[in-house]
Image (cartoon, rainbow, N blue to C red):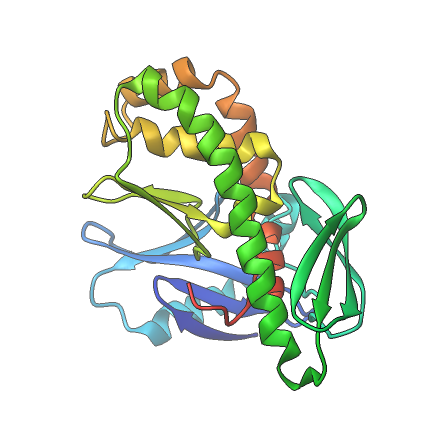
Length: 256
């Protein structure tokens, strides 16, 4: 098992080829290392000052148990075949399986059709892959913005509050956030999820304009605006890891 550090996450490459992401967090009151697995994923907490090597050794000693528990919850990110010029593949798009194929043309563009998307790229193909990734990222962002603009017209009057701006980008672990300047951030991977899941995340962040925590008052407000929020939250917990992995395959290295 190998690993590398990335922000507040540990990525573990298991012997079978699976990749497991573990959230790491120092806790001021922790007296020992502790590993937990929930529908949200895996988390290792440890006392402040713990050496990274100790955390690594602790995870290695619990690797089999961790893999088993995550597999039970369907949260292991299985390796995906890389995106290759000229090779068609399938990927989730708005909750449905879509086809991604390729074509040659005078200038780069993306064409949407009933089966999915066609990436049109010119020769030579030396820079076709980064161009294709940029096209995909722009198309997925456009899909999200179209939905969000429609739903904002409904929910902003209900709240009597509006965000100052909207930013859509790949996010490592979160689906959305609201910053101190009332700007909403949404994960680009939400374009791959069903529209209902995207709407839940939007409503969640909009409600934070009024209530900045996750108190009962906050969830009551979410319930008022979007009664089906629990179903969509649970869907994202179950399928979120694979959606983020799929997005990384499609738009890796595209600046956010």
